[in-house]
Each structure stands twice: as structure tokens, then as C-alpha cells.
Length: 441
Image (cartoon, rainbow, N blue to C red; front, side):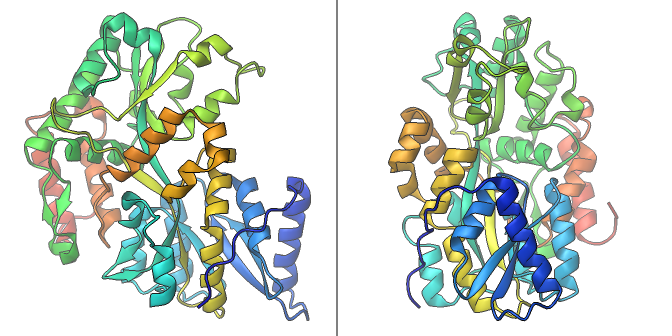
């Protein structure tokens, strides 16, 4: 198999024109066009839609066009729509964007076409960062191609950290961050609604304390539930400390990735410490001087970043790992072409465009050194993202992850009810029953 074609760099077409072309090709295929050109349907999450549509156009060839189809915003709803299609052996699902947590489920169900050995060596060569590579395989087969890798860091107001006397060049703990915000008029932004983002937070804290939510996931329903542990208690203590402090934001129980963004530069108050994904830098940069949600250049210059907080002092934190893996549907009629296309849409040029234009960071180390990224981002921030992805703590790689996440959400939410002495044990008991089929979510 020849090496993947690089993304052809073309002049950016207006979104409306490009969308019309993509939609037109899809409609022609659906109406039975007498053209011999294949249309590959690529189901994508809505992140960076314009950039992804351009990548699809650039990776189309004389033999096939790649038509973008939008999935819902919510990761769980994305999984549901794709699962329904693939359970029905839908032949029109050629390429799909998957949250890494759903890869084991889709692969074990036989819904993903594994890459043959020669292509697999290209998908996961030495350039792919360890955190991203870990979520692309199942049962010793490469079943997806990493497109972008996401991680969380601690974003903060430099002035708030200085007022608190925190040395942000050194590792900080959750307890230190909460106390600093509490005593200096600031807040702490997290994701604690009853959804997957809450489990992202919980998993990172548990792994940061040396534990796991679940181990031996290869055993499926017989996996070992580990949340009732010292690590689980340490995570619960962080949540309880935040809830009991003045640093807790008023919408804590329904907070998500977007709700705390506005707390960084409030009209009144000292701002916040916030754990959030890589998109934050571009999100704030794009609002400098732009009405009506503008921030000043001085405010933007007061934005700082450092590694994800440690759960236990002296223990290295394990930042979350997310991103997108591109899989090829097992029931498509053009799987070889779809795998070739997957190599292209996850290539270095595509990853560079996603990072520069949308803040979605590369799964390949070499892209971090490209001139486009070094011009678009501060050098120390690029280094922090790369370090955090490599040192990340993945959520359990299990074909039953949906049940694991749902069971933990049921017991750990609301955060205001978390008790370090009881919540880890109660959640372990419930999750064990759910995996055994004796309880329903």
C-alpha cells in the first residue's frame, strides 16, 4: 500500500459554497446519479465543521468524494446515532468520528473495519503521541486513526494566583487551588453536570491519586470495580472541599465546558482557576476587542496556564485525554477507499489546520513543531499540551463503558451530595450490580 496522500492545500472556499458542494454530492448519490464517482459519507461531530469540510474536500480524489454528515453535539447522542446505524449494518456509514471512549464498544461489536498491517503501521507510527495511540487499538488490532488529541490544563488569572501567593511554575494541588480561590475572591471552574464531562473530572482525580475507576476491562462485565479505594476517597474529598467553599460557582451542579468560560473575566471579582480543554486559548483570543463579548488585551495577557492539578501532593497529575478517532464502518461497500481517506483526513496537514483554526490539538508530535503552530500559540503552551497528552490518564477502555459512566454518574451526581465516607462505596456496589446485569441504569 502506498503512503497516504498529503492533504492538498487549496484556497479556502466560503463555507456556504463548500457546504453546497458537499450537500450536492450527497444528494446526487442518494438520487442515483449516473456518475461513476464514489461518495464516502463521513459522520463528524460538529467541532470545527468548516475546517473539517475543507479537509474532506482536500482529501477527495478523482475516484471518490468525501461528503460530511453532521452528528449531534453531545458525545452520548453521537454514539447512539452511529450505533443504531451500524447495528442495522448500514452500508452508507463509511467514515465516522468517534470519541475515544466508544472505540472498544464499536470494535468489540464488529462495527469497525480494522486497518490491514501495512496501513496500521502508518496509522500508528512513532510520530503518534502515546496518549492518542492508546485509544486507537482493540485486541491487538488498529481499529481507528487518531485525528486530534485533546487534554485539559489548568487555566487561571495570573493576578489571582499572585494574590494567593501560589507559585504556578510548580505543581499545584486541587486543595491549594480551591483554597486560593476561596480566600481571594475567585472561583474554581469544573465540569460537574450529570454527563460525561463529570466522569472525565472524576477519572482524572482518581488516576491522579494512583487509582482507577475499573481495572481488568478485558474481562468485560467481569471487570474489577476499583472506585471504592483511597483514590476514590481522595477524589470525593476534592469535590466536597469545593462544594463547601466560596470558590464553588453558583451553577456547579449543571456546569459544563462552556459555562465557566465567562467566569474567567467577570465584570466584578477576581476571576477563576478553571480546568478545561485546549480550545480555551483560541476562544479567549478571538474575543479580544470584539463586541459584544470582548475582553481587553490586558485581561487576555492576565490569562495563565499550567498542568492539571494534582489530587495528592507529591503525586503527578493525570490529565484527561479526549479527542477524535476516525473509524471505517465494517459494512461499507468501499472500505479500501474509506481507509485510504481515513489516512488523509488524519494526516499532518489536516491536524495542523484543526489546531491553528479551531484549537483542536494534534495527535502527532511533529505537528507541534510546525511553523504554523509556533506562530499561533505560545511555545510554553504547546509544550504543556504535548506533555499533558503524553502523560494523560485515559478513561476505562471497556466495551461496557457506557454502563460504567452511567452508573457512576447516577451515584456521584449531584456533587453537593458527595460524601468521601460513603459515595465511593455506594458507587462501587451499584456499578458492580449494573455490570452483572442485576441492576438497571
